[in-house]
Image (cartoon, rainbow, N blue to C red; front, side, top):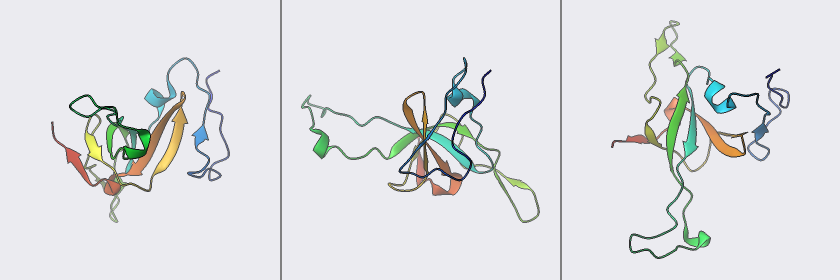
Length: 124
């Protein structure tokens, strides 16, 4: 059986990320955000400079770019219409330093933000 196992809804915090055991298919691929929520994974920070010098961990900044992995359908307007999302799967977005919810799937950290939390999209 591939049921999700986790803490009761509403009992998680950023200090204690949610954890689930998944069946055969990756839980990340099965996770569907609700309303205007977006699942992202932070992009890894470069550990070398362009000239090849390794940077110590203390000098590395927390990454503020993330890849959008899944989006909800959008937020509902007061009239009950779905407002379109500002980002789509595959976008590279600039995320705030704080906020969002941390999820742990398959020993990897993922983050859920609301569409309005993103600072912008990095165009390729």
